[in-house]
Length: 217
Image 1 (tube, rainbow, N blue to C red):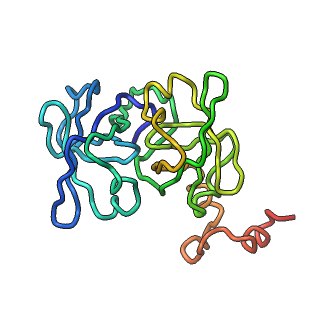
Image 2: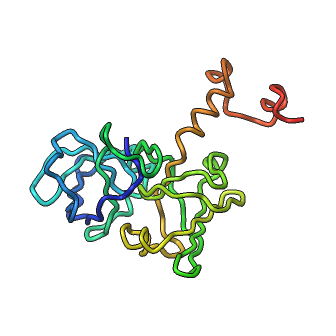
């Protein structure tokens, strides 16, 4: 588990194809690896990766076909900068929100414009994720815990302050940039609880389901 508070920005040092999937070598820059052991997890642009080797200036991780299909990793290139966060400890201050490191889908930056000293981004999420994104709710973008300022259909807006721009890769975002999205895990559990015993057979919450259970008046 993670908090969505980025600890350092690293760099993709090598991408090695291996029998259909890949191995990544990430240089970690200012990230302290003294307490990291083989098998530990590091969120890399929001993707929970397992450390399989510690060369000294970074770590290696294997990436499955599942992760390649559901994240932006297939678009990563050597030299690309990535957000990094080590897995949280019981004593960690939860400055962001609860983040699993399991990416739900890939979004696209629609626009970027200045807003005083901040930058305002509009990001389009996959349609299947839109129902989990709420005004003033939390969302994880490339591993960064952020607050949603506005939602219209599948598009949501973020107001990014200078500190976040300086400490993450968000300063490099432009219209067309692809980003990893993880919705608030509490929204997913709430949906499942609302379905009750019908969850095993249901295709999801529908208008008829809400009406049947008294949510639509």
